[in-house]
Length: 332
Ligand code: NDP
Image 1 (cartoon, rainbow, N blue to C red):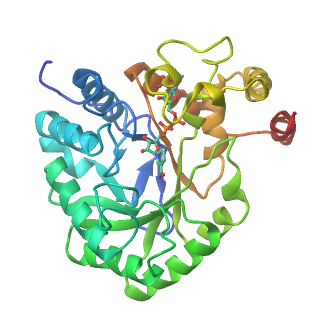
Image 2 (cartoon, protein in one colour):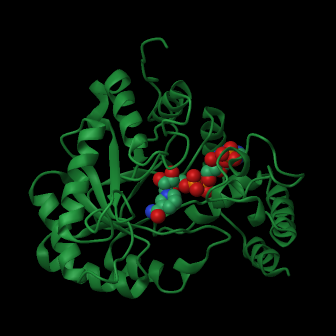
């Protein structure tokens, strides 16, 4: 691959949104490395995905210790791409990682103890060849560890200089409220929450989004396309190059039910009436909420990133459109 020279126009079309009441702004679209960055994937494609994103003002890249497969390999691959192409651009990037799911054998490679979180971040930094990450998340709540210990670990990591900010992911509204209070007391306020949020996952609307807004904390919605379901790709069967066929671990053939596809078909019609593709409507529907800082997409090829960016052209919805969307989603 030729030497990378980022586009001189990279900051011209992206919009940047502030995360809650913090000093940090995020691109409206961020790129996640959950899929398509493992050792199982083609390195040059992964490299092209990062180049394409950065060329279009996507400054935020989201990882976790366990992304791959195998676990850890997405961070290693990303570290290699950073070394090859982005050595001079680290200060233009927001890089996040997480710990909270199973990472290594034994009782100290999972959940939310200080023992796990501190050593996991050290290993992540080594894999990415970084001195620090911009955001370190606790990936999921741990019923076995006192929440105070987990929050003290996040605070410690920031004081050690290994992360600039901290975030929470998959915490319910109640768990988030408790965590936010502790983090504030410790002097390391939570920057952002990362919930699963899409047209098909409306959970954050019952409490979490209000809490984040009231607390001045940002929100970055993961799997905003429901792993690709909220596009037109599954309307006429399952394409061979889709996530269901290429991975099949988290989005399975059994998830593509007739009921789901009927909803997708109805949503697709609403999108067309708005002059959008479904993929764009699914993203702009999330971004219409001011509390949402960014939508965190995945992509298997660079054109999907440039395509997804077109959602920014129309972020407003009429009451009729919103009603029609809710009706389509309640269709049984
Ligand atoms: P999405 O819902 O955006 O799904 C991504 C998939 O959608 C792509 O792989 C592709 O599918 C399809 N797609 C994307 N753009 C287009 C397009 N323009 N046209 C057609 N299809 C498109 O997100 P993910 O589920 O990948 O999650 C995104 C990120 O969220 C992750 O990488 C990770 O960083 C984060 N995440 C966090 C979790 C947490 O617990 N905190 C859990 C899960 C994800 P295909 O591969 O079929 O081409």
